[in-house]
Amino acid sequence: MNISVVIPLFNEEESLPELCAWIQKVMDENGFSYEIILVDDGSSDGSWPVIEQLSIAYSCIKGIKFQRNYGKSAALNEGFKAAKGEVVITMDADLQDSPDEIPELRKMIAEDGYDMVSGWKKKRYDSTLTKNIPSKFFNAVTRRMSKIPLHDFNCGLKAYKNKVIKSIEVYGEMHRYIPVLAKWAGFKKIGEKIVEHRPRKYGVTKFGWERFINGFLDLASIMFVGRFGKRPMHFFGSWGTACFFIGLLLSIYLIISKFVDPEYALTNRPAFFLALTLLLLGSQLFLVGFMGELIARNSPERNSYLVEKKLGI
Image (cartoon, rainbow, N blue to C red; front, side, top):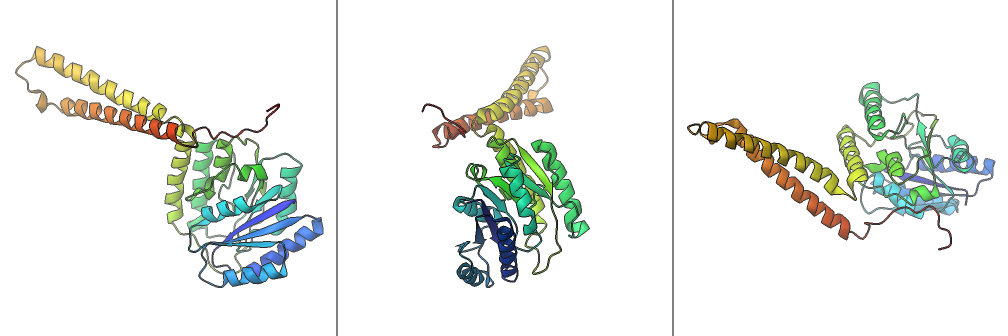
């Protein structure tokens, strides 16, 4: 199969028939073998009955329905598990992503050798205040922290090699950071393509201001886990050593001061409380590091490294 199109959706009953017909038109014009995987993330409207009707009309359509709303990351993760195509395309169901971009995205993966290609909605039709400006700030911070030169990390229109989506797990709000997840999994050739951003035709946006707070928290989590997930003592131990050493130096200084001036009470000096705090904090960080090492070394996934090729094995 050439292409799997994975579409997470929530309350998009109006747009689904038009979207699926558009995708079929593009696929037929290019002679691709394909499947469309519609993942209903607990919609409260008639999205699932529409998917059932579409699956009868189009044999290529498959549906996955969640019992309740789990979020876009969970929907993408389930869609990735089911995808069988050599190239996997993701897009939103609100018709703001154009299926006409699919052939070029597939070419960049199948012929140009990219592991992943992310869309860049250079010209947007969203509100400047609530979406454009925060998105630019969010993308700039993510680009700087991840060292991945993309302009639009959160664009729903992306293309992947099949082995990329089978090598990562998308959870929480991590759909914003799939390029970062792919990079940490060892896929280095990540490209970008300017894509069309269409005005919203049906419904309303499903994301609010909280996505920016959650987004930065998730970015901090993924950067930490990606770097220290299998060696937590390197992080906690380093900070624990620094705190304990500074606390120890302050303690030695206070002890010497007591010998020099026996009349002066140590507990009246702020340095005494600072030294005590640093000693305790350093010890606690060490304990956290040891606990982290015990968890990491006893995890069934402690050696879950991606092996690209094997010879003679």
